[in-house]
Image (cartoon, rainbow, N blue to C red; front, side, top):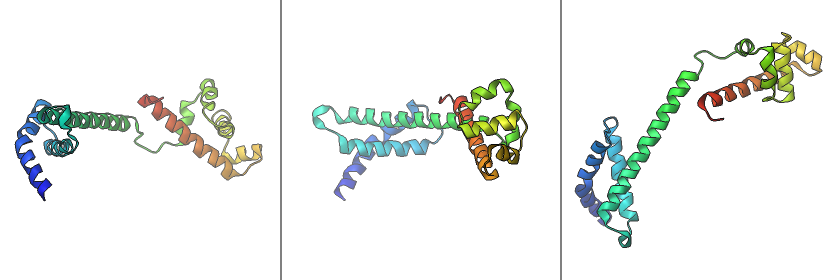
Amino acid sequence: MYEDEIFEKLHEQFEPMIYHMIKKLAIYKDEQEFYQIGCIALWEASLRFNEEKGEFKSYVYSYIMGRMKTALTNERKKQETDHLLLFFTPQKKTSEDDFKLLLSNSNIESIASLLTSNQSKWLKAYCIKNKTPSEVAKDEGVSISAVKAWRRDAIAKLKKHSIEVLLGIK
């Protein structure tokens, strides 16, 4: 109870500072969210403050400002990622035919290096020789479900790799 009363006084004293920072950082969207970030930062600063290291007012100012800037940076990164994912995510379900159209004989070898040997077998048989999973299974002496698993995993791996390349992760 005593701590709540102390924080209420601190909050009353530093509330104008929080609004000043919101205005200074030109925050017009989510103003209430940043106000809450400021209040939480004020609470944390009051718990972490060390009198030997300086004045409380300047400590609170830099602590709240730092939290707000971090939140702005995180929000910006999230918006950029969401925008890129929206832009590069296929609107329809990607099928194996989509990959077949993208692949020519010249670049199949380089793409096959990303895959396991079995996935590469499926890729080459499907894209170059136009073979069905049952034909590949017969040629390789494995079950049709095994070849379908190779196909599924190869497509997933190629999707993941293409998204990473587009986002600049790799």
